[in-house]
Picture 1 (spheres, rainbow, N blue to C red):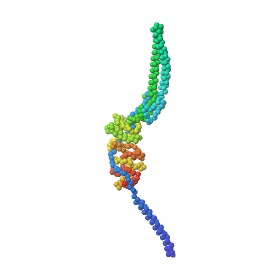
Picture 2: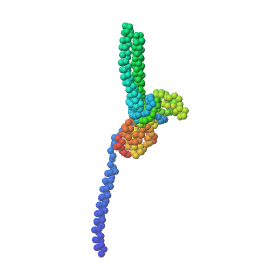
Picture 3: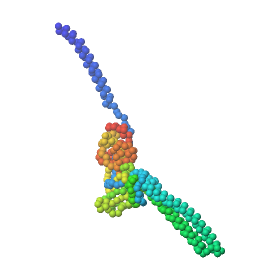
Picture 4: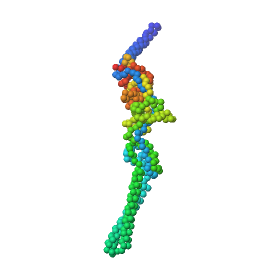
Amino acid sequence: MDKLCFLTIRPFQRITALVLILLLFLLSGCSQENSVKTVRVQKAVKAGTIRVEAKAVPVIRTFPGEVRAKVSITLASRMAANVQDVTVEMGDQVKPGMLLVQMDDRELQARIDSLISSRAALSRRMDTIRARLEYAKLTFERFHRLYAEEAATRDELDRARTQLQAKEAEIQAARADLKAIDAQIREIRHQLNYTMIKSPIAGWVSYRMVDPGTFVNPGQPVISIDGRDHGFWFVADVDETLLSHLKKGDKVAVSIPAAGLDIMAPIAHIRPGSSKGTHTVTLYMDISGFHVKTGLFGRLSLTLDTDSTVLLPVSAILDRGGIKGVFVVDKSNLVHWRVIRTGKMWKEEDGLLVPIFSEDFDNGKPELQQQQILVSITSGLHPGERVAVSNLAQLREGVTIE
Protein backbone atom coordinates (compact mmCIF):
# COMPACT_ATOMS: atom_id res chain seq x y z
CA MET A 1 0.00 0.00 0.00
CA ASP A 2 2.86 2.38 0.77
CA LYS A 3 4.56 1.60 -2.54
CA LEU A 4 1.36 2.43 -4.45
CA CYS A 5 1.06 5.87 -2.81
CA PHE A 6 4.68 6.72 -3.68
CA LEU A 7 4.14 5.97 -7.36
CA THR A 8 0.99 8.19 -7.53
CA ILE A 9 2.59 11.26 -5.89
CA ARG A 10 5.88 11.32 -7.85
CA PRO A 11 4.46 12.70 -11.21
CA PHE A 12 2.88 15.68 -9.40
CA GLN A 13 6.22 16.71 -7.91
CA ARG A 14 7.83 16.67 -11.33
CA ILE A 15 5.24 19.12 -12.70
CA THR A 16 5.72 21.47 -9.72
CA ALA A 17 9.47 21.50 -10.30
CA LEU A 18 9.03 22.44 -13.94
CA VAL A 19 6.71 25.35 -13.04
CA LEU A 20 9.23 26.70 -10.53
CA ILE A 21 12.04 26.55 -13.09
CA LEU A 22 9.95 28.53 -15.63
CA LEU A 23 9.11 31.23 -13.05
CA LEU A 24 12.77 31.62 -12.10
CA PHE A 25 13.70 32.02 -15.78
CA LEU A 26 11.08 34.74 -16.36
CA LEU A 27 12.11 36.67 -13.26
CA SER A 28 15.76 36.61 -14.25
CA GLY A 29 14.85 37.99 -17.69
CA CYS A 30 12.89 40.92 -16.19
CA SER A 31 15.71 41.76 -13.82
CA GLN A 32 18.16 41.86 -16.73
CA GLU A 33 15.86 44.17 -18.72
CA ASN A 34 15.50 46.55 -15.75
CA SER A 35 19.23 46.61 -15.23
CA VAL A 36 19.72 47.77 -18.83
CA LYS A 37 17.32 50.68 -18.31
CA THR A 38 19.01 51.96 -15.18
CA VAL A 39 22.43 52.18 -16.73
CA ARG A 40 21.23 54.14 -19.82
CA VAL A 41 23.41 57.36 -20.16
CA GLN A 42 21.96 60.73 -21.21
CA LYS A 43 23.69 62.67 -23.95
CA ALA A 44 25.48 65.94 -23.16
CA VAL A 45 23.77 69.17 -24.29
CA LYS A 46 25.46 72.20 -25.82
CA ALA A 47 24.65 75.40 -23.95
CA GLY A 48 26.36 78.72 -23.29
CA THR A 49 27.19 79.75 -19.75
CA ILE A 50 28.33 82.86 -17.94
CA ARG A 51 29.96 83.34 -14.59
CA VAL A 52 27.88 85.42 -12.21
CA GLU A 53 29.51 88.63 -10.99
CA ALA A 54 28.45 91.33 -8.58
CA LYS A 55 28.19 94.79 -10.14
CA ALA A 56 27.62 98.28 -8.84
CA VAL A 57 24.02 99.30 -9.44
CA PRO A 58 22.35 102.61 -8.58
CA VAL A 59 20.32 103.02 -5.43
CA ILE A 60 17.41 104.99 -6.81
CA ARG A 61 14.42 106.91 -5.56
CA THR A 62 11.41 107.28 -7.84
CA PHE A 63 8.93 110.12 -8.20
CA PRO A 64 5.71 110.15 -10.26
CA GLY A 65 5.38 112.57 -13.15
CA GLU A 66 3.57 113.20 -16.41
CA VAL A 67 4.16 114.25 -20.00
CA ARG A 68 3.37 117.83 -20.97
CA ALA A 69 3.58 119.55 -24.34
CA LYS A 70 6.12 122.34 -24.68
CA VAL A 71 3.54 124.37 -26.59
CA SER A 72 -0.03 124.31 -25.35
CA ILE A 73 -2.52 126.92 -26.54
CA THR A 74 -6.10 127.75 -25.66
CA LEU A 75 -8.38 129.20 -28.34
CA ALA A 76 -11.13 131.59 -27.26
CA SER A 77 -14.13 133.15 -28.93
CA ARG A 78 -13.74 136.72 -30.21
CA MET A 79 -17.46 137.41 -30.38
CA ALA A 80 -20.71 136.78 -28.54
CA ALA A 81 -22.61 134.04 -30.31
CA ASN A 82 -23.97 130.52 -30.06
CA VAL A 83 -21.77 127.58 -31.01
CA GLN A 84 -23.15 126.03 -34.19
CA ASP A 85 -20.80 123.06 -34.59
CA VAL A 86 -17.67 121.50 -33.02
CA THR A 87 -15.78 119.36 -35.53
CA VAL A 88 -13.29 117.65 -33.17
CA GLU A 89 -13.25 115.55 -30.03
CA MET A 90 -10.67 115.33 -27.27
CA GLY A 91 -7.58 113.50 -28.49
CA ASP A 92 -8.18 114.18 -32.19
CA GLN A 93 -5.21 115.22 -34.30
CA VAL A 94 -5.43 118.64 -35.93
CA LYS A 95 -3.52 120.41 -38.68
CA PRO A 96 -2.81 124.14 -39.18
CA GLY A 97 -5.88 125.87 -40.63
CA MET A 98 -8.25 123.05 -39.72
CA LEU A 99 -11.75 124.23 -38.68
CA LEU A 100 -12.42 123.35 -35.05
CA VAL A 101 -15.48 125.37 -33.98
CA GLN A 102 -18.14 127.04 -36.13
CA MET A 103 -20.06 129.84 -34.47
CA ASP A 104 -23.61 130.80 -35.49
CA ASP A 105 -23.16 133.40 -38.26
CA ARG A 106 -26.78 133.78 -39.36
CA GLU A 107 -27.19 137.21 -37.76
CA LEU A 108 -24.05 138.51 -39.45
CA GLN A 109 -25.10 137.04 -42.78
CA ALA A 110 -28.50 138.73 -42.45
CA ARG A 111 -26.81 142.08 -41.74
CA ILE A 112 -24.58 141.65 -44.78
CA ASP A 113 -27.57 140.79 -46.98
CA SER A 114 -29.38 143.89 -45.71
CA LEU A 115 -26.38 146.13 -46.35
CA ILE A 116 -25.92 144.68 -49.84
CA SER A 117 -29.57 145.45 -50.58
CA SER A 118 -29.13 149.01 -49.25
CA ARG A 119 -26.03 149.47 -51.36
CA ALA A 120 -27.87 148.32 -54.46
CA ALA A 121 -30.70 150.80 -53.78
CA LEU A 122 -28.19 153.56 -53.13
CA SER A 123 -26.41 152.76 -56.39
CA ARG A 124 -29.68 153.10 -58.30
CA ARG A 125 -30.37 156.40 -56.51
CA MET A 126 -26.91 157.65 -57.40
CA ASP A 127 -27.59 156.91 -61.07
CA THR A 128 -30.63 159.18 -60.84
CA ILE A 129 -28.65 161.86 -58.99
CA ARG A 130 -25.90 161.74 -61.64
CA ALA A 131 -28.46 162.24 -64.38
CA ARG A 132 -29.95 165.24 -62.57
CA LEU A 133 -26.46 166.56 -61.89
CA GLU A 134 -25.62 166.36 -65.59
CA TYR A 135 -28.83 168.20 -66.41
CA ALA A 136 -28.02 170.88 -63.80
CA LYS A 137 -24.55 171.35 -65.33
CA LEU A 138 -26.02 171.83 -68.80
CA THR A 139 -28.60 174.28 -67.46
CA PHE A 140 -25.96 176.28 -65.63
CA GLU A 141 -23.72 176.42 -68.70
CA ARG A 142 -26.65 177.57 -70.87
CA PHE A 143 -27.65 180.33 -68.44
CA HIS A 144 -24.01 181.34 -68.12
CA ARG A 145 -23.78 181.89 -71.89
CA LEU A 146 -27.13 183.71 -71.96
CA TYR A 147 -26.05 185.92 -69.10
CA ALA A 148 -22.84 186.78 -70.95
CA GLU A 149 -24.97 187.70 -73.97
CA GLU A 150 -27.27 189.66 -71.65
CA ALA A 151 -30.10 187.33 -72.64
CA ALA A 152 -30.67 186.07 -69.08
CA THR A 153 -30.93 187.83 -65.77
CA ARG A 154 -28.61 187.51 -62.82
CA ASP A 155 -31.33 185.79 -60.80
CA GLU A 156 -31.77 183.07 -63.43
CA LEU A 157 -28.04 182.43 -63.46
CA ASP A 158 -27.93 182.23 -59.65
CA ARG A 159 -30.84 179.77 -59.56
CA ALA A 160 -29.08 177.54 -62.09
CA ARG A 161 -25.86 177.70 -60.03
CA THR A 162 -27.77 176.84 -56.83
CA GLN A 163 -29.41 173.81 -58.46
CA LEU A 164 -26.02 172.59 -59.71
CA GLN A 165 -24.46 172.98 -56.29
CA ALA A 166 -27.36 171.10 -54.67
CA LYS A 167 -26.98 168.18 -57.06
CA GLU A 168 -23.22 168.10 -56.48
CA ALA A 169 -23.79 168.05 -52.72
CA GLU A 170 -26.37 165.33 -53.14
CA ILE A 171 -24.00 163.15 -55.14
CA GLN A 172 -21.23 163.71 -52.58
CA ALA A 173 -23.58 162.64 -49.77
CA ALA A 174 -24.59 159.53 -51.70
CA ARG A 175 -20.93 158.67 -52.28
CA ALA A 176 -20.28 159.08 -48.55
CA ASP A 177 -23.22 156.79 -47.76
CA LEU A 178 -21.87 154.24 -50.23
CA LYS A 179 -18.46 154.29 -48.57
CA ALA A 180 -20.09 153.85 -45.16
CA ILE A 181 -22.05 150.84 -46.38
CA ASP A 182 -18.95 149.32 -47.91
CA ALA A 183 -17.08 149.85 -44.65
CA GLN A 184 -19.86 148.11 -42.71
CA ILE A 185 -19.83 145.18 -45.13
CA ARG A 186 -16.06 144.81 -44.75
CA GLU A 187 -16.35 144.97 -40.98
CA ILE A 188 -19.06 142.31 -40.84
CA ARG A 189 -17.15 140.07 -43.24
CA HIS A 190 -14.15 140.45 -40.97
CA GLN A 191 -16.35 139.44 -38.05
CA LEU A 192 -17.43 136.40 -40.03
CA ASN A 193 -13.83 135.18 -39.80
CA TYR A 194 -14.30 135.15 -36.03
CA THR A 195 -17.15 132.66 -36.42
CA MET A 196 -14.65 130.06 -37.72
CA ILE A 197 -12.15 129.06 -35.05
CA LYS A 198 -9.25 127.25 -36.73
CA SER A 199 -6.15 125.53 -35.42
CA PRO A 200 -2.96 127.60 -35.75
CA ILE A 201 -0.65 124.61 -35.14
CA ALA A 202 -0.42 120.85 -35.64
CA GLY A 203 -1.12 118.75 -32.57
CA TRP A 204 -3.87 117.12 -30.53
CA VAL A 205 -7.03 118.45 -28.93
CA SER A 206 -6.30 118.30 -25.22
CA TYR A 207 -9.58 119.77 -23.98
CA ARG A 208 -12.93 120.76 -25.46
CA MET A 209 -14.88 123.30 -23.42
CA VAL A 210 -18.05 123.84 -25.50
CA ASP A 211 -20.73 121.87 -27.32
CA PRO A 212 -23.13 122.88 -30.11
CA GLY A 213 -25.70 125.34 -28.78
CA THR A 214 -23.46 126.80 -26.09
CA PHE A 215 -23.53 130.61 -25.88
CA VAL A 216 -20.07 132.09 -25.52
CA ASN A 217 -18.86 135.59 -24.81
CA PRO A 218 -15.78 137.30 -26.23
CA GLY A 219 -12.65 135.87 -24.59
CA GLN A 220 -14.31 132.65 -23.43
CA PRO A 221 -12.08 129.55 -24.02
CA VAL A 222 -13.50 126.91 -26.35
CA ILE A 223 -10.63 124.53 -27.36
CA SER A 224 -7.16 123.66 -26.02
CA ILE A 225 -4.45 122.20 -28.28
CA ASP A 226 -1.11 120.61 -27.46
CA GLY A 227 1.55 121.19 -30.10
CA ARG A 228 3.03 118.16 -31.82
CA ASP A 229 6.12 119.56 -33.54
CA HIS A 230 7.56 121.53 -30.64
CA GLY A 231 8.43 118.60 -28.37
CA PHE A 232 7.42 117.50 -24.87
CA TRP A 233 8.49 117.83 -21.26
CA PHE A 234 8.42 115.18 -18.60
CA VAL A 235 7.47 117.04 -15.43
CA ALA A 236 7.93 115.67 -11.92
CA ASP A 237 7.98 117.09 -8.40
CA VAL A 238 10.88 115.95 -6.18
CA ASP A 239 11.76 116.61 -2.55
CA GLU A 240 13.39 119.97 -1.99
CA THR A 241 16.12 118.22 0.03
CA LEU A 242 17.47 116.77 -3.23
CA LEU A 243 17.83 120.15 -4.92
CA SER A 244 21.49 120.50 -3.92
CA HIS A 245 22.28 117.28 -5.82
CA LEU A 246 20.59 118.39 -9.05
CA LYS A 247 21.58 120.87 -11.71
CA LYS A 248 20.52 121.79 -15.20
CA GLY A 249 21.91 119.39 -17.79
CA ASP A 250 22.11 116.34 -15.50
CA LYS A 251 20.74 113.16 -17.09
CA VAL A 252 18.14 111.30 -15.07
CA ALA A 253 16.18 108.11 -15.72
CA VAL A 254 12.66 108.62 -17.08
CA SER A 255 10.20 105.75 -17.57
CA ILE A 256 6.88 106.09 -19.40
CA PRO A 257 5.27 102.61 -19.45
CA ALA A 258 2.40 103.49 -21.80
CA ALA A 259 4.90 104.61 -24.46
CA GLY A 260 7.40 101.82 -23.72
CA LEU A 261 10.11 104.36 -22.86
CA ASP A 262 12.95 103.84 -20.40
CA ILE A 263 15.48 106.57 -21.22
CA MET A 264 18.03 108.95 -19.79
CA ALA A 265 16.74 112.50 -20.27
CA PRO A 266 18.50 115.80 -19.45
CA ILE A 267 17.10 118.22 -16.89
CA ALA A 268 16.11 121.26 -18.95
CA HIS A 269 14.61 123.46 -16.25
CA ILE A 270 14.33 123.53 -12.47
CA ARG A 271 11.46 125.75 -11.41
CA PRO A 272 12.76 128.09 -8.74
CA GLY A 273 11.14 128.01 -5.34
CA SER A 274 9.56 125.22 -3.35
CA SER A 275 5.89 124.42 -2.88
CA LYS A 276 4.77 125.44 0.59
CA GLY A 277 2.32 122.57 0.93
CA THR A 278 4.45 119.70 -0.37
CA HIS A 279 7.99 121.11 -0.02
CA THR A 280 8.87 119.94 -3.51
CA VAL A 281 10.56 121.47 -6.54
CA THR A 282 9.51 120.85 -10.13
CA LEU A 283 11.89 119.39 -12.70
CA TYR A 284 11.39 119.60 -16.47
CA MET A 285 13.12 116.88 -18.54
CA ASP A 286 13.36 117.26 -22.31
CA ILE A 287 11.92 114.15 -24.03
CA SER A 288 11.52 115.61 -27.51
CA GLY A 289 11.83 113.16 -30.37
CA PHE A 290 9.75 110.40 -28.78
CA HIS A 291 6.19 109.45 -29.69
CA VAL A 292 4.29 110.50 -26.57
CA LYS A 293 1.18 112.48 -25.71
CA THR A 294 0.27 114.91 -22.99
CA GLY A 295 -0.91 113.37 -19.74
CA LEU A 296 0.94 110.04 -19.95
CA PHE A 297 2.03 108.81 -16.53
CA GLY A 298 5.69 108.12 -15.86
CA ARG A 299 8.39 107.86 -13.22
CA LEU A 300 11.53 109.86 -12.57
CA SER A 301 14.39 107.91 -10.97
CA LEU A 302 17.16 109.76 -9.15
CA THR A 303 20.39 108.00 -8.20
CA LEU A 304 21.23 108.53 -4.53
CA ASP A 305 24.02 105.95 -4.05
CA THR A 306 25.37 102.67 -5.46
CA ASP A 307 25.19 99.10 -4.19
CA SER A 308 26.81 95.78 -5.17
CA THR A 309 24.24 93.40 -6.66
CA VAL A 310 24.29 90.27 -8.78
CA LEU A 311 22.95 91.00 -12.27
CA LEU A 312 21.80 88.37 -14.73
CA PRO A 313 20.51 88.63 -18.32
CA VAL A 314 16.76 88.26 -18.41
CA SER A 315 17.15 85.64 -21.15
CA ALA A 316 18.76 83.25 -18.62
CA ILE A 317 15.72 83.23 -16.32
CA LEU A 318 12.83 80.81 -16.71
CA ASP A 319 9.36 81.26 -15.26
CA ARG A 320 7.63 78.03 -14.25
CA GLY A 321 4.17 78.71 -12.93
CA GLY A 322 5.21 82.00 -11.37
CA ILE A 323 8.38 80.56 -9.86
CA LYS A 324 11.53 82.01 -11.40
CA GLY A 325 14.69 79.96 -11.63
CA VAL A 326 17.94 79.35 -13.48
CA PHE A 327 20.09 76.39 -14.47
CA VAL A 328 23.28 76.44 -12.40
CA VAL A 329 26.26 74.46 -13.78
CA ASP A 330 28.61 72.86 -11.24
CA LYS A 331 32.31 72.03 -11.62
CA SER A 332 31.44 68.69 -13.26
CA ASN A 333 29.31 70.51 -15.86
CA LEU A 334 26.13 69.03 -14.37
CA VAL A 335 23.00 71.15 -14.56
CA HIS A 336 20.93 71.90 -11.43
CA TRP A 337 17.65 73.81 -11.28
CA ARG A 338 17.87 76.71 -8.81
CA VAL A 339 14.95 78.87 -7.62
CA ILE A 340 15.82 82.58 -7.41
CA ARG A 341 14.24 85.87 -6.44
CA THR A 342 14.49 88.85 -8.76
CA GLY A 343 14.49 92.58 -8.16
CA LYS A 344 14.63 95.59 -10.49
CA MET A 345 15.26 95.32 -14.21
CA TRP A 346 17.90 97.45 -15.94
CA LYS A 347 19.26 98.27 -19.34
CA GLU A 348 22.52 99.95 -20.24
CA GLU A 349 22.43 103.34 -21.99
CA ASP A 350 25.55 105.43 -22.54
CA GLY A 351 27.39 103.33 -19.96
CA LEU A 352 24.70 103.91 -17.32
CA LEU A 353 22.15 101.50 -15.89
CA VAL A 354 18.61 102.69 -16.55
CA PRO A 355 15.79 101.18 -14.48
CA ILE A 356 12.92 99.59 -16.40
CA PHE A 357 9.43 99.86 -14.97
CA SER A 358 7.75 97.31 -17.21
CA GLU A 359 5.78 94.14 -16.51
CA ASP A 360 6.44 92.55 -19.89
CA PHE A 361 8.84 89.98 -18.41
CA ASP A 362 6.41 89.04 -15.68
CA ASN A 363 3.67 88.63 -18.27
CA GLY A 364 5.81 86.29 -20.35
CA LYS A 365 6.09 88.54 -23.37
CA PRO A 366 9.02 87.67 -25.62
CA GLU A 367 9.77 91.23 -26.74
CA LEU A 368 11.55 92.14 -23.52
CA GLN A 369 13.47 88.87 -23.31
CA GLN A 370 14.99 89.48 -26.72
CA GLN A 371 16.56 92.74 -25.52
CA GLN A 372 19.75 93.10 -23.52
CA ILE A 373 17.95 93.46 -20.22
CA LEU A 374 19.59 92.77 -16.86
CA VAL A 375 17.80 91.68 -13.70
CA SER A 376 18.90 92.15 -10.10
CA ILE A 377 19.06 88.80 -8.26
CA THR A 378 18.13 89.29 -4.63
CA SER A 379 18.57 85.65 -3.55
CA GLY A 380 19.46 82.24 -4.94
CA LEU A 381 22.78 83.04 -6.68
CA HIS A 382 26.24 83.97 -5.51
CA PRO A 383 29.15 85.59 -7.34
CA GLY A 384 31.37 83.04 -9.07
CA GLU A 385 28.64 80.52 -9.93
CA ARG A 386 28.05 79.52 -13.54
CA VAL A 387 24.61 79.89 -15.11
CA ALA A 388 23.34 78.59 -18.46
CA VAL A 389 22.18 81.36 -20.78
CA SER A 390 21.30 79.56 -24.02
CA ASN A 391 19.51 76.41 -25.24
CA LEU A 392 17.51 76.40 -22.00
CA ALA A 393 14.67 74.39 -23.53
CA GLN A 394 16.96 71.32 -23.79
CA LEU A 395 18.26 71.47 -20.23
CA ARG A 396 17.00 69.36 -17.36
CA GLU A 397 18.13 68.54 -13.83
CA GLY A 398 21.19 66.31 -14.00
CA VAL A 399 22.00 66.95 -17.68
CA THR A 400 25.65 67.42 -18.58
CA ILE A 401 26.76 70.48 -20.58
CA GLU A 402 29.46 70.11 -23.20
